[in-house]
Length: 318
Image 1 (cartoon, rainbow, N blue to C red):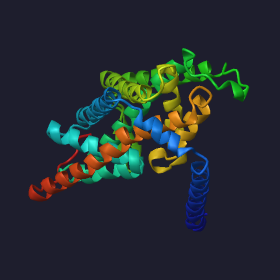
Image 2 (image 1 turned 180 degrees about the horizontal axis):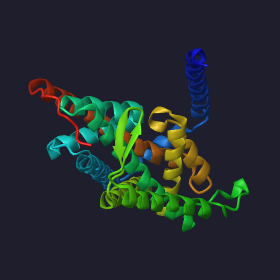
Image 3 (image 1 turned 90 degrees about the vertical axis):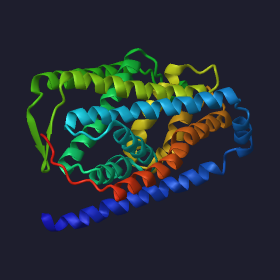
């Protein structure tokens, strides 16, 4: 069966390229139907206070996300200084949002941490910790929103939405199971594809939940301040969480088109299309493009520091 694997791999690659081509065609087709003059008018209507609030929320969110790697430092047992750890985290986050988790979140962390002298095993544990942190917080927050009935299907879908609380309950159960596992099996070593991992302690798992749930809540607040006042925070946050999963499943860099499609499907009956698209464009500018430009400069600085002060490779502690 091994001789078929290269063909299967190539088939998956071509299927992915075909999927991207279809998505690109649909995006272009949709873009040609949008009244962009009205979108630009809605963008120009934002006042200074709203834009300043959006920028401030972006800065706080990135600062909070950089704490993921500080928790990972404790988990992976390395001793890099706090400013460098937070810089690597923020740069990797910006690239992850715009280029995808594999290239940005993992690839840039491996490069920057290896230049700082960390071994591949330690870096692997850092990546695993930050990824699990993000999704543990996601499950907790999304589960709570679903159980509370904050996320509702649009009326034109003809769905009651009675199943969402059960889905939310399952998410919360998964978080509880993770916490119990961290309490009962902390210190037990797991082996995955040559890498060695262990579950964090229960206090560290609780920190993961608080950090990630707070960060997702901040992201939702950012989108909320860019939307019309009559749309509730819970509806905006719930839609953003749904869009995040859809973007992760589609594997499209920056979730281009996916984010917009989910928001239009979920909130298009409550917000006119130009206003909704204007809010999402402003969100992308604040949370994606602006930080990406800063991250490019930050990455250049980190590379220059690594070249001037090459660090010896350090061992990892299991």
